[in-house]
Length: 205
Length: 206
Image (tube, rainbow over the protein chains, first blue to last red):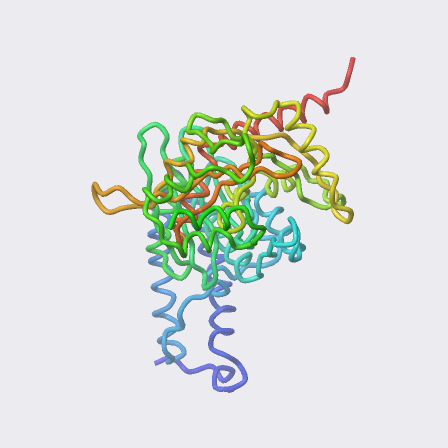
């Protein structure tokens, strides 16, 4: 077995924190590797999932601890300014930043400000999207009066939206105006398999 | 049971739509309630073919100059959220004029002191379209009606009406309904028009 790093034995250093730092480095490498793939958009999401799984196994062996459930922090550990790597999400990212400045009453006394948790989920979704989908129509931001942030696309031919709730839960809708297809589904940022549908619909826009 | 609807929709309760949902009305009861006479002489219930206008305001503070972000708070699928709680205020186009709606919107946008609002215009759809909204159902089953439209005249606006959610909705239902509003009110077309006007205004004059 691998020698257990001393720092892990220290009770004040959480496994999650080490996991986050470790994954951050590896994720950055993985991300840049994936960006180098050409015409391989349809393979990226499974590749990321496989890499995540391998990463968890590796860390479990290294640290001899239970697998830590992925969190937004571990799944999307990224440095400041790294989030917006695609042109299509620049506007949405700027809007999410602005939403963080809103307070209750931003649109009349009943309008609730979005929580950091929901906005972090939206930012994490954008980051994952940028890592997986090379190009798509510009994404637009939205915020409702209950403080639920969301993202949506409307190409005229098709529509896709996702709203971000507590506990990293997502509600998604796809509408194809040409075929009449409508698909509603829930997803969770912790479940890469859930997100596959979202990436697929967005890539089809 | 339908007779309990009008006292709710004409109240100023912030959660009137939750009260409506608690009634658990059947589709037939909702239809009956929509057809009940109003409390104002000469104001008829909202008919299916009537066009309804939803005013669009930019709610952001004056120090925010990014027009894209302003639009993301003014007209998106999430901008019709009043229908989930206090009722979505609309104007009955057949009982007023487009000029009057614009005048009303401009005045209303200036009503609050600390925050500057900008009236951008209005989107429209037919009442019958809104009444088609239904919850998702399994297989070939038809879901329950989700939205209702009521004439709710105000002292200064006979043409006022409310669009209310009539069901307890989960996350997916809400997401579905946001996209439904976006569809029937043709939000994308409105936004494109605003952007076009903005670009034209920013063109240097010869």
